[in-house]
Length: 380
Image (tube, rainbow, N blue to C red; front, side):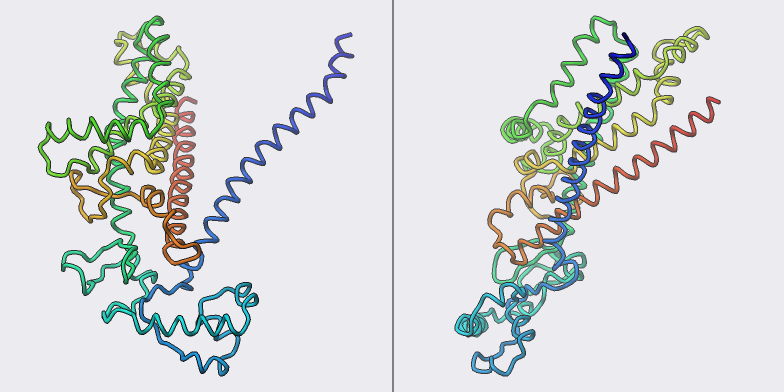
């Protein structure tokens, strides 16, 4: 009877396994397709096929007939599909528009600079209309568009660093207390309460930081800029704490109780057993929690958009206003012209952010497995 039921259940189990496989494969495929889309939009910048110069060499419209189709298409900056859709009259009109733009181009020595070139994206440049100290400028508006990525990278690193320095010690301390030191009654209340913080919308945390936290911290520390990397980092840390706590607490709870019981039997206190025995044994899981916390912090948008001040200042001071990569994408993508160099640049920094988080998670996974193998080797 039992064998007959088990035999009848096998097709259902096979279908369930195939369904789970398809769902997981679809999720992986969706992430891959999203990255392909973002990377495709950024490729013209990566390979230097975009030109953002405000003043370019002009070919008179009357000389259009002398140009080969490929030369004309490159001059007008059209794709092959767009070029095929235009007739001679439309191409003539575009040539005349280019002539008119050339007459109205600014008489600035920087007007002929292609600001989407990598030397201007990452290197310093003294702009004719900027102060001597402003050599790294993100300014996508105006006659000359400037796209230096250094201010955005520094802003992202500052807010992420403050968030991790604030959240990781608190989250790990809470995880150690809940998993090793708290009574069962307190554990039933504390763990759900801390994990519920992850359900608070980031826009609510950003609003709280903007209205309440910024004023309190400015009065406490006395700095000049009310909204800065420090305020954004502290608010960001509140969003990171539940992530780090949940994973670290699970890792600490997964350590066999015999470890702590053996330490207690040898005369160690509960705190000594938790700190010197259980925590090292759970190091791979704790490290994974920190890595995921980093990914949560560097990818957050609304909190840093509302609480950082959104000023692209190159400064390592935590009390200066700053701007992150995610806040820049959220604030500017809706205003960027589709297919333009500003549009492509925002997709480029989005692809860079994706690569950073992917590489960080990959490196974290490799280090975590090495720690686990080393600890298991010692256990043997």
